[in-house]
Image 1 (cartoon, rainbow, N blue to C red):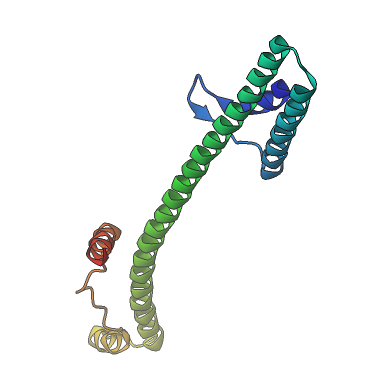
Image 2: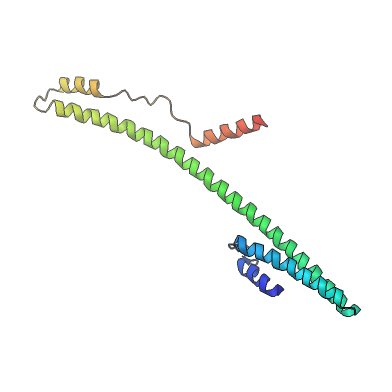
Length: 170
């Protein structure tokens, strides 16, 4: 019975290459724990029925191995949970970084689009009159003031500020 459960785990983990594959889902974990506990109970009941010392020591070894295997499996699940948590945190931080970069590009594009839209409006209003002085005056009146004075903070500086803030809170 033990071999059946451990084949599932051996298929899930490749110890030689160090790669961890997807573990069994929660239902299988629960059923593994229940079956391990049930096996331990069955073995204890058999131990009570058997009086010979040779069989008793063999059964006690089996009970001990089931408990040790259960503990190893729970340790592996804790490691897998920590691994998945670190991956999720990394993905979320990368998403925040990309959002910050795309927002600054978006702001720049909007400013540039409004500049060129004002130039196009000035050209439409002066269709027939090709006076450059009128075009310059009209385009200056229609063009919004684009200020590139304050550059938005880069994601790296935002990250450094967040780390400094979190250290000062502790």
